[in-house]
Amino acid sequence: MTRIATLALAAALSIPLAATRSPVAAQGSATLRRAGQAYGNLSYSEAIILARQASRERLSSDDQAQAYELLGFAYASLDSTRLATEAFKQTLLLNPDRALDAAKVSPKITSAFALALAQVLVLRDLRIDSTEFVAGTGTLPIRFTVTRTAKLRTRLIGPSGEVTIDSALGEGAVRLAWNGLLSNGLPPARGTYRVIVEASAGRDSYAASIPLTIVAGAVDTLPHLTSLPGYDLLPETVVPPRSWKPVGLALMATSLAVGGSLALENSKLGGGGRREILTIGAGAALVGLFATLKKPAAVPAQANILYNSLVREQLARRNTEIAAQNAERRRQVKLAVVPEPRSGRKS
Amino acid sequence: MRLAALIGFTLAAAPLSAQQVTLGAGFASSDYREQADFLHFRGAGPAALVTVERGRLALRADAWHLSMDPTGEAAAGLESFTVDEINVRLGVRAVSVLAIEAGYLRRSVAPSRAAQSYSAATLGLRAAYPLAPGAEVAVRTSYVAGTDFSGGGSAPFGIELGLSAGYGPGSGRFRVTGDYGFQRIDRHTDQNGTRLSVPIQSSVARLGLAVRF
Image (cartoon, rainbow over all chains, first blue to last red; front, side):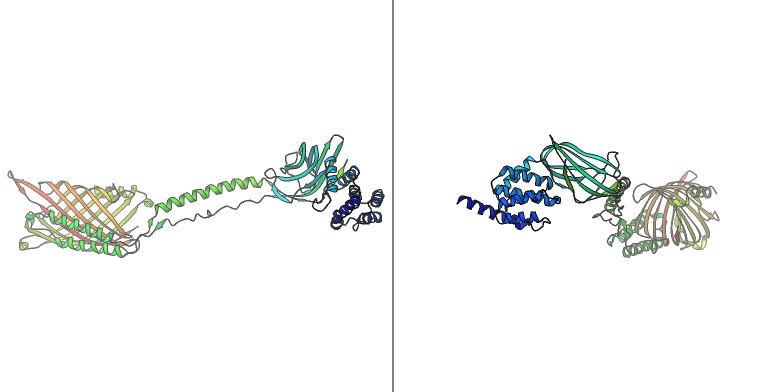
């Protein structure tokens, strides 16, 4: 009874595998397809025989990986953990990025898979995103996962040279960055390059690579500024409001002259020529009146002049900085990196 | 002659690009009194002015030629005469509107017996207020010293007062000008040991047109 219940549970948990991956439907090998059907019918022993038979056939790498995975599933379903782990190790060596969904697959199977993952040395999830960066200034991020502690050596190889990006011990998730320069200190020329990651631990070693298309181009220069954003120049002269000051000044000057003349007249001479002072005094008062009615002259706005000089000074300083940056940018090379599908191998 | 040379030298010394020159011409009217109220003359004639300004310095030269006729109750016994007067003043702007002026004036009368000819030095202040573009008013006062009279005598006290106004459209390159000058000189003579007071007082009004360039 317990045996039947276990098989039923294992079958129930295994159904999603077939549903999600369709290992049988995707195969070109009839043997592998029959093995999948046998597993689907809960005939694990038959599935094992057929999967082993299929693995000895001339299959594609993917089909081989699926044959071993089916074998691992079947062994795990029969509680043969050691054999399941060995089968999953072969799966991982053929397809290192393979992962099982713990929410959909039986814990017996996932635990065997995890055990295989801990024992095998592979590089998983080697990723490089498409990006653009300036050689020597920016970096190209490279990330991958190594399943065991291993000595890692990461290189970039291509038509214009190569460079060792990193060489160190590593385990788990590894993040590296390439500065865009080859070992000769120069940026790479346009072409197809390859990032190769080699891992070695004891007698085990593994290598994965990912091809890249690198396009070298000029770095965009910055335009010179004609104004500072948010800092507009202010008018340096302002027209003051109309005032009565001019006529006041004219009347004051006239009063001074008239009063002074009258006060200084020599009494012995019987007064002075008042016709002259009255004529010119009236004229001066009239000038004051005209000046009051005239549109006032624009006067310098010292605060605005100071503000504008500071803004111009900042603008000149910023443009000097931009010119220096542009001179630097003209010597730089912008790299556009586009990764291509990767491959991995065990050696 | 020496005065003309001085003016010419000053004009030539300043570069044209750095200076502002004003030339003006007009009509002058004058009232002249001497010794007592019966010696009263009035007259008119042409007038001219030249001003050269450079930075804080300003050189002003005014000249006029007047034909003076006696006026009043005693006119019948008096003789008409002509007056040629020139004033040269060199000013240095000390503070915003205030300038210190040193000058020289020379007044020549023909015939010489009709009135006093004299020359003197002046030292005073001038305050000029720009009212608007092309509009200005100025007042000045000077102490008249070292007066040298053709008829002898001396003047321990002499003073000048002046009022000037100018107005022109736009920036005021062309403008109408008006000037008033009042002069009082307390002349004394010594006749047979007696000190006599023979004051001189004149006022001149000038109206004219000026161009600045």
